[in-house]
Length: 126
Image 1 (tube, rainbow, N blue to C red):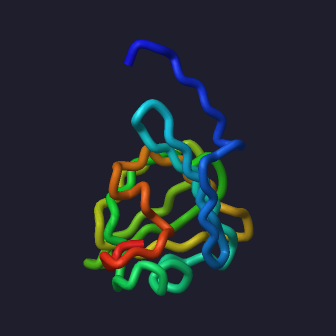
Image 2 (cartoon, rainbow, N blue to C red):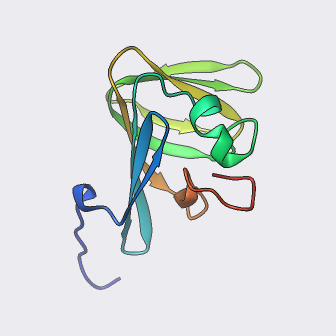
């Protein structure tokens, strides 16, 4: 890369809506960044599972919580609550749900496969 590229998430390339939330996706200089807004009442196993076609979320996540709170829970029952200012790494095989009455906003550096989160595909992944 020989230039500086500046883009704004408020003018994303794509918005993906799902029950109780949406994701704004932005491609920047060969990378993908997304901002997910999960509204109160959002739960992966209820809101995204029907789109993904898998029992649990099968994506790695690496991101930053800007507002709101969420609980993450792995298949083995291990869990963590996340909130504003938290940097999060979560492996595949998890459920998640919003805690409280404030939307949880999560900004994520998406790997190429994770850039398809919230989108139906024939692969069993969202």
